[in-house]
Amino acid sequence: MTSAWRLSPPGRLGLLGVFVLIAAALGGCATPGAGESASLCPGTPAGIPVDPDGCALYSDADAVPDYQDQCPGTAPGIPVDPNGCPVDSDVDGIANNRDACPSTPIGTRVDARGCPLAGERIAIVTNINFDFDRAVVREDVKKRLARVIQLLKEMPEVDVQIVGYTDDIGSAEYNRALSLRRAESVRDYIVTRGIDATRLSVSGRGKTDPLVPNSTPEGRAVNRRVEFVVR
Image 1 (cartoon, helix red, strand yellow):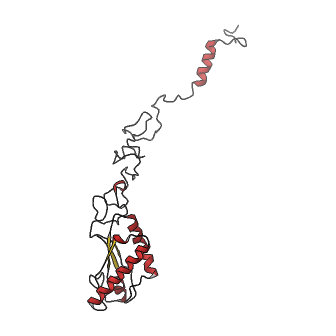
Image 2 (image 1 turned 30 degrees about the vertical axis):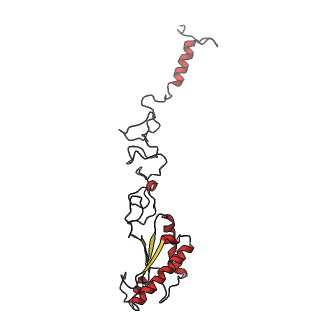
Image 3 (image 1 turned 120 degrees about the vertical axis):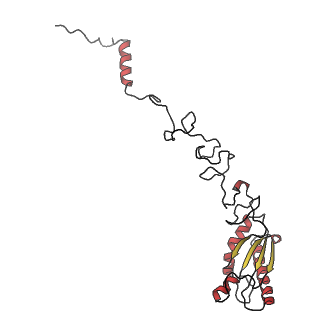
């Protein structure tokens, strides 16, 4: 019995056969977007508004998607924190891009510019000690003043009063004079480090307002100090 079909001679494969072969070859290949919507961001949470590529929206172009952005209207180019809000380095409620004093010590009350209010103490450096009955700025004291000097450079809008204190050895009158000389010595040194003298005033308060009791050598050393108060 003769077979009901036969192979086409070489070169005689019809166009229909070619199409069938091509379709068969492509049948196992996925077509982009077939069966599900194509997305460049397949991990985007369900229900989140997306752009035509399937990615979360970034209205203010700050690299924080809108659904996580607590400050979606931030102007372009402003550094933001992980919440999408302008960075506030000193945590004073004034963002760095609007803060005239972005290095204000944390906890200091500030004005609308972000600078410390008058009367605020920006540095109480208890390790700024002097030898007994001396007003010369020691080398170790200069090292401790370095951070205060840097702070003053970072806050050029701020003027300060340098207030000197002593321990309780000696009369009140003597200690007031000594504390003033110490404050003047600190001011003069700070001026040599590039701070304008017009930003600095001095006062001496002697043995008043001790930070700790003067009953021990350690306590007296703590109370021999200078403080920096915004004018």
